[in-house]
Image (cartoon, rainbow, N blue to C red; front, side):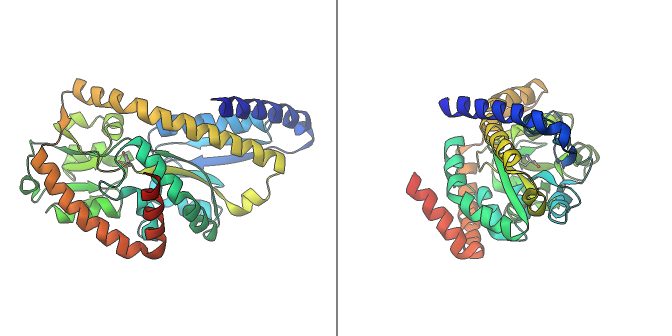
Length: 329
Ligand code: PCA
């Protein structure tokens, strides 16, 4: 807590100092694309992060968030920032697994299944992530986890055999592979579009957090949520490296301080949002509860296959991350 208090006073001081010079400097506007609904806790955290920068830099940098994929669709956000079409933005880290398997380190089934373990895994992975992103003209600012991932269906499911032929909404390579290994048919759909996909039958099931199901009112189409705690994927905020290079040292410090606060606050929000949204799914009429033991055993077998495949694809970087993580446990 002391660390956070120190941060707040640093930010306040920086804000005052920046305020004094702001009249002399032209204000810059940074549009910040985000993929998830405005009410989602990541988006709420991002909005406060944006405000923190605007206030802390005395208005020299005004950050304006654009949630729900309204400025760029989720799948286009990283490229937009790499190429300077947007200076800053948020994206699902594992959404880039097709570029480099290492990005999927947070979607390995049953490797890190609690908030504590997900934080350790992130600590183990962060230096490698920063390096990979830097090579892509990006600077990592902060990252916040999603709540644990569970399975959504529109019928009772007690075994992998019950999943055969179901159209399964995927959000990254790992979720598509999970569909294949369980005999389902993967279809990639952004969170912003899932309500419609379920309503029209384009998709009939998914793996996600209670949070995304709640945000998108999936009880209108789906009936069951099975808590599996398969993994906790992460969102991250990145800034274009050239844009970052042009920021004054004082403002860089403000942004870093705001990022640290956002990561701290967002991570707590994720924890608190977990039960709240599971209750919300129940209130919407869904059956919510842990997956049965035999189903979990079957999923763990599939998880072993996916872990081996990931380690193979992610090479030395992947092994270094999982070794560092295991050493922290
Ligand atoms: N929600 C996001 C990613 C993980 C999650 O819980 C989604 O479903 O797209």
